[in-house]
Amino acid sequence: HRAFSVFLFNADGELLLQQRSPSKRLWPGFWSNSCCSHPRAGETLERAVSRRVKEELGIVATAEFIYRFEYQARFGDLGSEHEVCSVYLGQAFADPRVNTTEISEWRWITADELDTALTTDPASFTPWFLMEWSTLRKQHADRLAHYGVPLPLRTSET
Image (tube, rainbow, N blue to C red; front, side, top):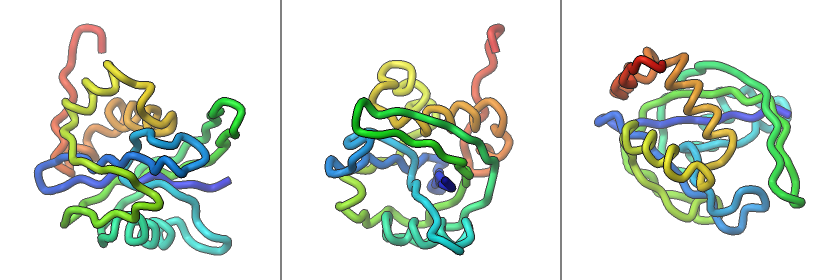
């Protein structure tokens, strides 16, 4: 089914991360991107993105479509995801006022801090977030730079 993931950045180029509510059936308590959800029947993705950012984060933000991919992920015996996910980048102009039914915690994080966290503790993040951030850093660094995210350091291995 259709889904979307939104990555919102503040004026300092920091990403808004959310920790999923412990009441979520799949991946409760895991850290993930700013907002992710599904459009309603007949609803455009752009409209769904605006609606869910407001419902989950309590803010209005701009967002642009970056890419789309299909993925499957299983969460133990409780269920799985099989989605065609559209990824959006955007700008947040205020701190969120989160819907606590959806989100238990939130924080702003720099790209370097996030890259370190993903290396040291990848199991605390949702599987779609791991895939999306990797793709954004490797294939869409120019779009991330537009939001103030520094380009990743190049090594002889990259």
